[in-house]
Structure formats: structure tokens, C-alpha cells
Amino acid sequence: MQSKIDQSKYLVRDVLAVDLPFFMSEEDAIGLAKEKISTRYHDQTWILNSQVMEDALGVVSDSDQAVIVVLDKNGNLISQVHGMVTTARMSQITDALQSLSSD
Image (cartoon, rainbow, N blue to C red; front, side):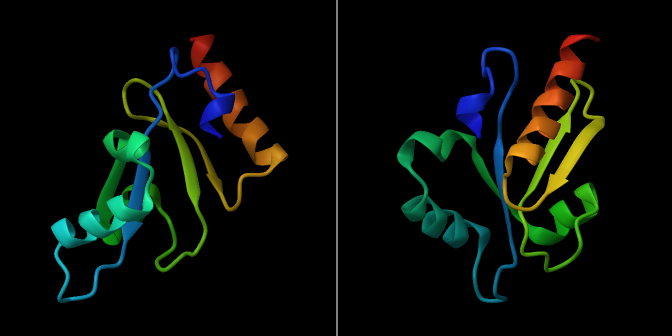
């Protein structure tokens, strides 16, 4: 998806929200995730406790779907897409980004 967005115009971030077992720290989770994520994405991948993301984005608890959000420069939610990235969902995201350019 990121290859379809002009990153010179938009700040693209990846966030992983996880339910951590009671015995695992966020540092341990970050260490494990970094083993799975390509080194080139380490600087743009954040790991947060899932409750923080659920509350902030209104995502249903225990959702197994990805969520893509578009925020304006003030942090206002412009668009939100749930599920696998399809052509239609990608169009929704790019349309939302283009609407930011016209502001």
C-alpha cells in the first residue's frame, strides 16, 4: 500500500496494536515484533497496547481486521477503512488523501 502513496506529501506510519499476555512487557513484544518486521520499517512501526488503539479509533475489541486511518494535520479523523486492502479500499484511502491536498 505504501508504494501507492506519495510519501513526500504524506506521513505514513504503521502501528501494531497487540493484546499482551500478562507476563509479557511491551519491550519484549517490541523485540519479538522487530524479528518479524523488515529492518527498513523499524523506524515507522509502533507497538501499543490494544486498548489504547481500540479506544482511540473505535475499533471493536478483539477485531482480527486491519484498520487504515487517514488523519489531517490536526489529528482529525478523515477516513477509516477496516479489513484487507482491496482496490476499493485503497481508492477510499487515496481519495481521502487527495481531499487533504485540496484543503
